[in-house]
Image 1 (spheres, one colour):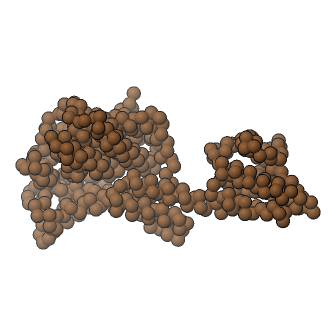
Image 2 (spheres, helix red, strand yellow):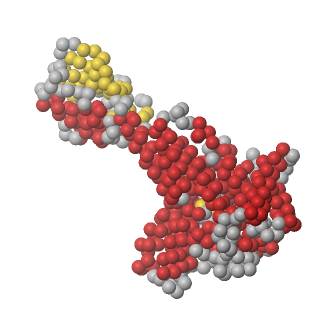
Image 3 (cartoon, helix red, strand yellow):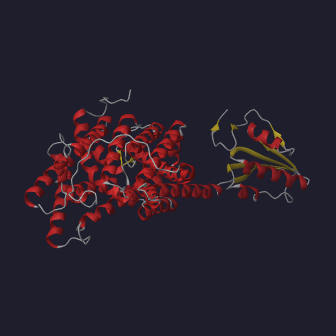
Length: 526
């Protein structure tokens, strides 16, 4: 039913080993995002388990990894702060309520098949999104080069050890596949660097050191039992629902946008096609259950998804294996994970950054329209500065739409097909819509024109009501100038709307009239 055991373009060994690699990389990120939201690390870790397992099982993109993310943590953290401000330790209850409501919204989004709107994202926006995300991932690794106790930058021997272990990890990932591809190079790098650090560099920072930053876990132990389901309690729903609904809506939209953008990127890499609406439903179900079982929610993770894909994980089993391995780490194998050096995980993420950044975009300067470059740079900068991928994508789409409207408004051409002393036939080419109506009307001078005028719309399209209103105004101008204006090759929909406007327009009905719907942009030849 869920295609768990499809072997097309994948195999069990690659999926299992890749899933183990992803699980190791998930640990420090889930902990970091839990800190960002102001909750216990286990809340982030269990969120990664539930998000990863459910979306891998039921989602629309095999091979894509979901878990606790920074964007969700920042927004969801506001719910924690709001609840804590009310007293009574309600921060977590507000968080779980917001995540469950957000999950419900995402399910509705998928059921209503609104995931198709991801197709409206232009390619320059996609490039800016990817480049910005690569920079954000890169910047997120910098704190690992600080002393965890003093928050000061490492120097001297500790810095040399950190840099050396990171470099060794990257070199192993890059060149180990030349020896064999039987085992993911990222997993080999983490294992080998972990052994070296354990034997020779015991003072290097480990996962245990990160865990110890939590006030509730000063010993830095990774251990916990499987959480039990419970509904949020202590919330005054009658007065708090506006805040909860608003915050949940933002969480749901951020999660959907990041997930669908990641899905689209993985589609391009694997040359396959995922199912956006199905992914929305799966993300919603995962968030709902994550909140129900005490997780902080999340969405698709582009970094871990790329690790999975590049480690050979293509099927659903890879994500399921990652979630199962992470749950095992929490409940059983914590002592092993605690000694993994942070340097090894930083090296893995650095390689993700190198693979994520669209380096070819640096060669586009001077080769593509300047407006496209503006969109790429704008989305990249907003992503880096605000760390808000959803806002960056929204701004990029709006900017692209405005640029398109501005450019297409200039491409309305009027030529004279035939001309006699008493009649002149104009041919109109281009799109007639809100952005081009001024250009259209300026090309006709009713008072100085000849007695009989014909405007042929055979090579034009009337796109919206603004275009129809411009035609109405032009008809009125020619009538006031005591001129005869006829319109030719308008679609039946245009004719019908002009008649409903109450303006008697002389429209010629011809056998080769086009057929299209106004304000729908779907042009179908009859």
